Image 1 (cartoon, rainbow, N blue to C red):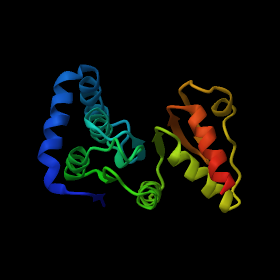
Image 2: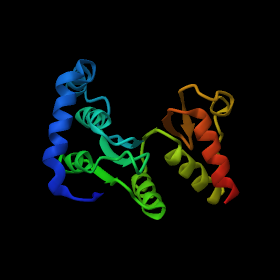
Image 3: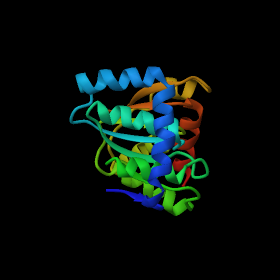
Amino acid sequence: MTHIRDITLAPGGHQKIDWVRRNMPLLRGLEEEFTRAMPFKGLRIALSVHLEAKTAYLCQVLAAGGAEMWVTGSNPLSTQDDVAAALAESGLNVFAWHGVTADEYEAHVRAVLEPGPAIVIDDGGDLVAKQVIGALNMNKPFVLPARAVLFETANDAGEVGGIPYIEEKAYAFAQNILKQLKK
């Protein structure tokens, strides 16, 4: 399943991702290791990042490790349509395009979370915030990791509703939760 702007842009995206593959030996090494070990086999990963060539290659590396990838852009203005198309053409589930409206962005976030990810990788907190708000609306208990609130700029990892997440900006995560709760 995918929802992108234009699949015909994929060749340009593949070129960009191939350049990254050639020039990022650490990720290339992880791809080789993950292909052999399949550490994510059978796991669904929801990912929200600035969708460009480097992060697209990360998506492919995780997929090479057996993950079923569900991807959206964390910033509507940084999403590269050709890269999104290349990921979609490669078989990943992609919901993103440059310049989405607020309603389209919200729909993309929901679409990435709907299949029930085992792992969430989130730049900015939108996926995790949506999970927390969803848990609240369904009267499900959850514990907001204390370190997510305490450290303004530190990278963070935790768990919400039994689903692990990686959060780049803990402060942004906490602010996003508070903003959503005020709605």
